[in-house]
Image 1 (spheres, rainbow, N blue to C red):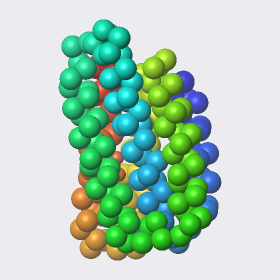
Image 2 (cartoon, helix red, strand yellow):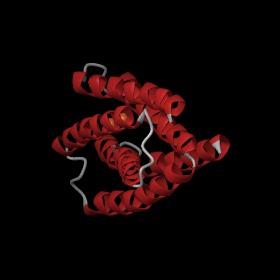
Image 3 (cartoon, rainbow, N blue to C red):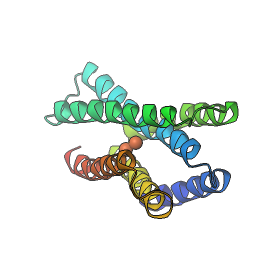
Image 4 (cartoon, helix red, strand yellow):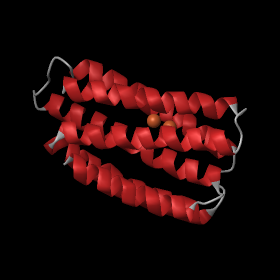
Length: 167
Ligand SMILES: [Fe+2]
Ligand SMILES: [Fe+2]
């Protein structure tokens, strides 16, 4: 599954990178819309499992962590909105349709294979870290807010790797 995750991610990222050349904040906004979906999906599935009496010792920790991550990703999204990332209809159309599919894929994936779902989300966060790092290196190395967001994405990546061991 890890190989499939990596291939699917590289394909999607390749398409988005091609479509969003030189449109940094629109690309970041689309990525942030998509990046939030796995955390909502993980929370939904954890609630659902709990409602069926399938709570595990790690449930509370994972739910608290994923809730915190959704809030943090929403802060990133708001920052990209402040920078005009959602200004154009075409970007909103693409992001909202992508996230609709991606959310439900994550719900199913996390229900059936939670470790693999965490792996995919961790790969997405690794990509997000590299995307912001590339922007800092090539466009504006003094953008402190983007530096903070890059560090958040790196933290999410390491948290997801730990979650893989907990589930
Ligand atoms: Fe983010
Ligand atoms: Fe993130």
